[in-house]
Length: 455
Image (tube, helix red, strand yellow):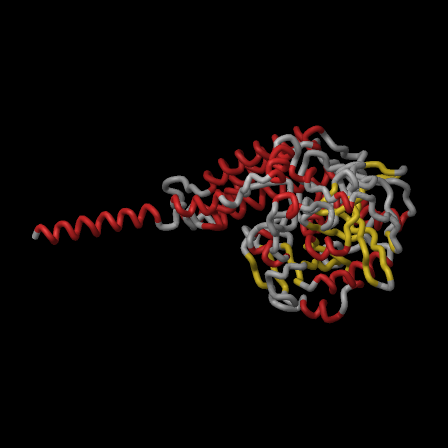
């Protein structure tokens, strides 16, 4: 009996020791790990430098310090640089800049801008309605359900995609920038967005409740009445912060509604005239994908795109630029970007030599591990071709007169690795790609990391 007790005690001790060490850093492992830093003279010099200087500054590649050639064989005519300031509205600035380029060409205008603030007002009201109605539609699900949790995590924001531009201007039209100019809040949206998120989450909880004793047949009308009252409060906040959108205005001696102004200045069907392309090697090419809740109006379309190899997308981009048509373009802008020069080049920074490690992931692996994704939208306006092969590209940015006079230049190698989305007119889309759009889309969840919206 005594022997059995001893054996049991020994087994318990062994199990306890195993539980404490399995998967943890043991003393022996730590000794091995510590050999990763040798404390050599070069290690000490780098450590001293990193104590006073940022990593990206020290990693700047001296062999690539010269300014890139700024000549382009083909370039869309544009006039004026925009500035989204401290807001996440790059998608809106970019979409309106595409329309601006079309209006400038159509009417032979000088420097001109559509009002971003006008469209942003309606974007925020529509997003509030989208959230509240989605809460009503999912109110029978548990609050811990992934979809409900995502809705409460993302009730409203100022990020977005080209789909939002198409839906908003189709429904509400556009106005010149001086008719509804920017405000302090539109230029720095964080504080207003924070208050709207709190209000909408509070409202969302109320919409998941039903008054005691209410008949089931009366619930839908009750919820819509509640939602309307909630949207009145949202409208009040937006009017205080952004101003009241005009229903009519004067422009060059003529009276317009915003819808009439869009029809005259731009005039084409934005929702059906463009095709959205994606280069996502983590998913099958030649397929059409749809993102649930990735829209800006409840009655609008979800983000819908066809996934293609980057070489196919370049063909359409080049054709569009050659025909003087700007495009909505988005990418992972922060990677290997020399902001003062305004140049995105894989050779700009040598982190491997500085830190003594290898970064080996390709584009597919970076997407799958959340290391890269679309973060910023800009207007693609230029390409530099040599014997028909692109060498570099240029986009019109919305960060004011920063970088290369308000533009960013990208090498073709960088374009391959960090370009994700492009929106082109259907006239530049080959027939085989148009045929792909007839497929039933594969619906992806709204929390997919590739589809959080550009900022």
